[in-house]
Amino acid sequence: MRIVFSLLMAITCCAAASAQTVNIIPQPVSVKTGKGQFTVSPSTVLVVQDEGDRKAADFLNKYLRQYYGFSLPVKKQATKNAIRFNTRKFIRKPDNDAYSFSSTPAGVSIDGDTYEGTFYGMQTLIQLLPLTKSKSLAIPAVSIQDEPRFGYRGMMLDCSRHFFDLAFVKKYIDYLALHKFNYFHWHLTDDQGWRIEIKKYPELMSKGAWRNGTVIGRYPGTGNDNEHYGGYYTQEQVKEIVQYAADRHITVVPEIEMPGHASAAITAYPDLSCFPETPTKAYYPKECAWAGDSTGKQVVQSWGVYADVFCAGKENTFKFLQDVIDEILPLFPSQYIHVGGDECPKSNWQKCAKCQQRMKENNLKDEHELQSYFIQRMEKYINEKGKTLIGWDEILEGGLAPNAWVMSWRGEKGGIEAAKQHHNVIMTPTDYVYFDYNQTKKEDSVTIGGYINLEKVYGYNPVPKELTAEEGKFIVGAQANLWTEYVTNPGKVEYMVFPRMTALSEVLWTPLEKKNWPAFEKKLKTQYKRYDRWGSDYHKEHFKATAANK
Image 1 (spheres, rainbow, N blue to C red):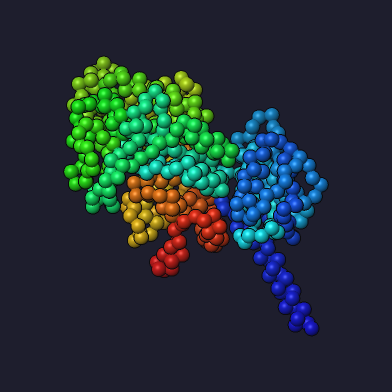
Image 2 (tube, rainbow, N blue to C red):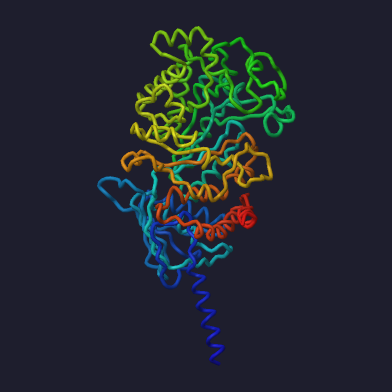
């Protein structure tokens, strides 16, 4: 009898231990496990007394319906069997989106310092739910104190090289919300396609949004698919996406590329080029196959950087871009607008009489200073509209625009330089957070190349050691970029971002001293099951690759 009793006790203890397993990503600041568990069932009530917390309740109910088959009633009060959302009221909004979370056998309380904080506490609740579908969901008793390390936690999606429909853009935003990201950088224009409706310039959609073909395979390609390809988002669809993101406490930052990466816009309006009569094919790599009409300006069909850029010497260039900004800004409540500023060849400017005249009139010593003139002029216009300009680190060349934020992509050097000048910086270096790079040394599909495995992403610290403590305060956060030259469909997007995006969420949220790679690896096995639950594709080779490298 004693043996049976001992076995029963052991089984009970194991079950209790199992019930207390907590796998939360990103790792919270403080987690203390308690005794017992709370069971979420269809009779559980969501208590929402403040309409500002309705977003958290609605997201949770949508998640429960989608993955567990039921939702919960929302009421202003309940005495028992309740999940309570409460955002604390302050005279001034706190600087950080902190929250506290408490679950006991009697119920769950989520208390945020801000509505965002309460929403993040709800995301923590989702990660405590069991992974098997049931209408009786036991979550462990825990006490959590938590807040994000960085105020800017972003992910970028390039919809210019390949176009993704509204449904998938929303799904991508949901992925961000589930990982406590708060910025979605939407890359909307480039050489390969213009993706946003501008009513004053209809040919951006009829011409600039479409290309006559796309190279096959890795650059320079093995041919051309000869397929008319493209698409764009109407302004109503953009509003829908922006609201969808806002309901998840995510800010959408649009990117309108200038002065380079402008072929699609120039296709629609050739006079924006220094040389309107020169056909696009003249700039096109000879080793890349071309489809369709080769006369005049065309949306390019391969990848890379092209010399046909916005003419900096023409006033109509600035009029066009200001008109575009005028239509863009009402669509995006974001304080920030991204203007690119990267990879702008200067060869046409060197040969253009109007650009050279502009340099002479403004005492500019070279074309780098002409680019600085271009960006600073656009920044002044954007600032007059009450907005802040963000650009890639090339905007440092020739002198940084006065109030600009810098995204440092060519390593960390540009970010370090900008932070030392007391400009806000978002770190996004190629060697840590370019998610179009390979995940294993031998990739199983075509990518742009490079190699960034999961452990490298996890090991990234966005604040460089070269900065003083005071300078380090100008590193406001970081983001990962997914360029889509070789990412043609939603499944490939998921495959390229997961699980690296999950690792980045902990980089950006969790205090540096709380990060723990072995602990994260253990949690990742549970996270894989979440990906499966979401029906998402993901890179499954991490543990195999780790074993092979030992």
